[in-house]
Length: 284
Length: 342
Image (tube, rainbow over all chains, first blue to last red; front, top):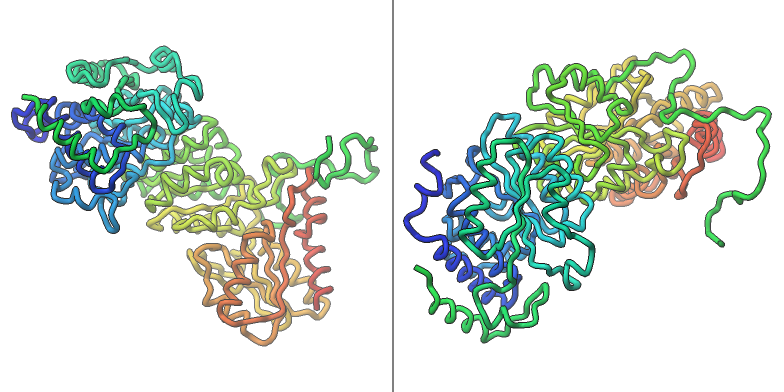
């Protein structure tokens, strides 16, 4: 462990509290624009808290430090969630929340590497992230750099054929330094992912391709932390996937109860309502 | 079923023609009798460069023997990546390697890079200006295998991509010089490749390749042929033949399609009322011809102007020399049409 390991970087703030902060930052950004992929951000907040405050080795003041673990977001519309995590991690300043999605912002609506410190790749065109992550993992191996490459992708993105080209390639090139995280919330633009293109059975599919696969509740922080530990500490050179079943809008019950769609509509007065609710639920 | 295909009905019986040419191999030779050739200039140039440039990597999508990358793979096996028959991955992974500080040369056929992998080149590579070098065999009409392998619109596709430098080299000399120049160039490059036994023509003219520079290979008073790729070879042969008939042709070679050397092209086209003929191994839609036309119009220069290129069609299969005659890329065809236009 270097002096930049998350354990040393952070204080004693619990992962639950980190996830709570990430949800708050995301809601505040959503409030700025009156819109945003808040359902996904609330759903993935626990996974991001574990990523940035337990698993990832990084130096917030030096986002391009060569020893960092790379976190590649292929789902560009999840940018609001990653900005929230980067703010909480100290990579982005909290006082720029008001610029979210505005002209000249470093935090545009869809995540792009050229705009945002800590945003490793340009997402948005789905099915790109895992292939780029494969190349980065190959490059790290060439450099004898022990860092990991993470790729957060969505269940809908498993419909892209290019994802499976990358899945096969990661095994071919023995990329034990690659960890894919699938956010399985069963929602894509036109409805349920499971109604669109058959992604089941999930873990056995990845295993059949030669990956080490885990399927967990992505809103159970202890389970997420254990899965990341397992993925990082495997001794073989299989690439690893963690399939995280998440609940859209997790943490704000009146939004969780709403008819869930890919793009959850939040009325103007509901942003404050959601923030007020969260304020009353601050974890230890 | 009724279709809009312009081809002869597939139900019409045919007979073997008495003087028919055999179909070409997948990659037909562009050799002319008695012409010097160099074997696998791309593979040898990249291998030589990699001896001093340790950031150079070679990636293939199951076509290393058909892009001459196998020469590099043999010379530097530890720096060669076989990515399998997966072009979307090929370019995504090349982008990832470039992010980690390497200079990957990703190779396949021009049809697969330009058609199948466009979104991946655009978003993973060009949008961020990553130094991935895309080197593609079978450009334009260089195979008789039909539209699946004939990249007749690759320059139009790649020219339209912001941030991409596009190069269409003529011969072995130019490919050999272009490889280090492309590697030194800070951004992404799309480079067409001739492979196998590649004719060597430009060396005797003392030619030096520079990215972004058009070069006059031959002076002439009556006609200015502006050409790229192997059509410069054909233009030089046509100019020789036309010279014997008293028609004096200049040849301006434009290997960099983008960024276009507008200054030189406009200056040359402004000289002395010459017929300007653009000759390219590409569809007349969206390639060098239209790029030159736009440059001249924008500069207010209006010479008599003609295009030699492939029609805006899916082309036929057959023997390459027959196809070059049929579609107007052969020396004889170039000579005949220029005479008609004068």
